[in-house]
Length: 433
Image (cartoon, rainbow, N blue to C red; front, side, top):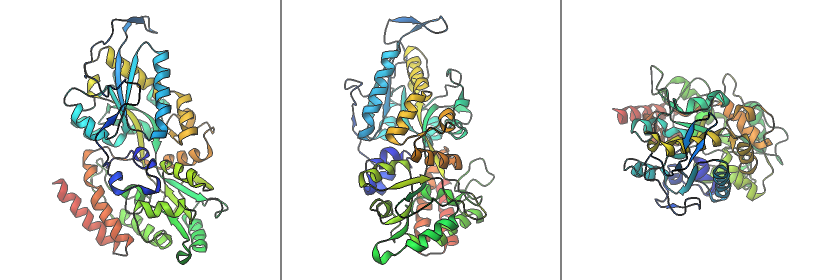
């Protein structure tokens, strides 16, 4: 399951589809202008130029050319072009960027053929699968960045089995969004939230307490984890936790406290539309959702998830990162160029703050996270990120999503939660055999 929902959902707004959530998009890539139509790289890690300059360490370093791929909503592409142009102006290296419409298909075909980029941008959940398949490589001995400049969640997400496979630049998670025309103060507890929903909820008049895409384990993760449960944890004695009593307790909690106040369809579109049309007091959604709310003129605020009695919400977090692709493995000037760009981009406070202000991105640089200078709504998401935990990077996590989705759909529709989760657990185990 692709976790880069900013790319897949921000363009779709309330019309996001299940296919989009699964990353089912077109296969063509389109040049964003920096690469002059060249969407890739030969994968040759040797020098692309005879030019040499002096490094800060007074060593002669050859200038290189690196290709980087990304997949962005149309409004974000100009900002990325500007960043690439700025780096190219300031650096001896040259970076060529391309916007790719189907990153998974393009990377899995181009990289093994030796035609991949030095780096590509995506969420961290591909780290384990791509490292095991040789699509990304460890650069821990090459990177000149102190990882302590990043939040702990970001540091964890960019490593797989002790291998540093990229550097992070922003985060994603879900938070509580509230309609300021309906809600006087954001609730700190679920009990407070339920009180507001109980008062406002009137489905006969198209009024709802909450819009939350229920049939998606990502959106439900905060509550599945809230009482000690989990879907999957490769470090645990019991890797599959879908049928653990603590996980079932978390899902049952949502059935008891949230489902009664939601539209009667658990899919993304109707849940997101309820709040975006001004017909719900609360939404649980991510930063990609804000552009829709801005377009609709909703008077909203964002805050961290409220606390359930006896538990703590722990939403999955996704860390968007620049991966070290296979083309960097053999070193050389082009690999140095790619690494230089990634280090610059990932540690640039000005870029991160501008992205937060213009696009609602959630920084992972501790200096910004702790500064108190983030825009109000970004701060709310940032606090939600601090509540959460990075999504597992192990390839087997991919076998968890569909059975959990089926179980949550049953739970939403009034079926026995314990039985639904046990069925999902059995299916996952069977798929992993």
